[in-house]
Image 1 (cartoon, rainbow, N blue to C red):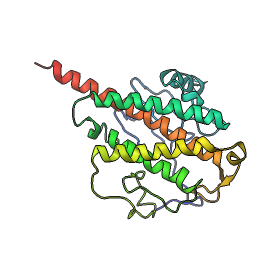
Image 2: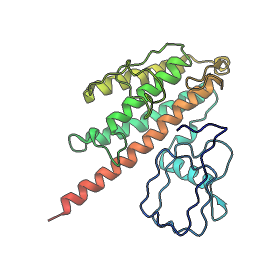
Image 3: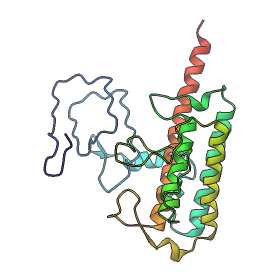
Image 4: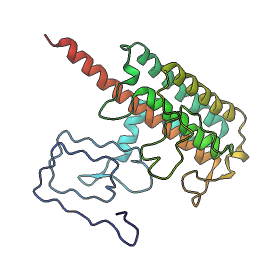
Length: 256
């Protein structure tokens, strides 16, 4: 049964419950409250952590500014992702692609097959690149350039895309080779680069349609910010999972 605004889901309360090792995926936890909890080793990973104006409180302290600053340290150039001028956006895109190039070099030096390894049921490196192909098609191709739909067949939609009633016939059902993925990715990176090379301040203010929610208009600038946010978040995921793969390979090599 699908909940509606008139029929909100019941709020659950856990008291003296053992949730050790529990996994919450694609769950709505906004305004959740935890009191007297043991959180040793707990991990929270949310791509929407910085959306909106609400704080994320730990023992009464808003940790969002600290988390944001630490991510900017770990990923130099991330702080430029919300640039609001053509030159600033071009610089932000250039530094982002240098970061991706370094990650691609890291992957190339890892054991064969690494690009197809999934960590904790997340997308593999190759799948991540395929998703970014689609993200470019959605926010640049559809929203800004007006291509309908303009999807590259190698693009990979988000989880639940079909369940949301979207047409999946544009996308291949065959697993592409990594070289094919790289070619599609390079094409879409070039598409963004070419667009940013000629964008003007006036064009950044033009109103666009939100591809997922037409009732909430976007601007060219907000669409470009979404592309930059997607790129940085998925780079963070990729590096996180490559670290996990490296640790697993190291542990396997140390076993007698």
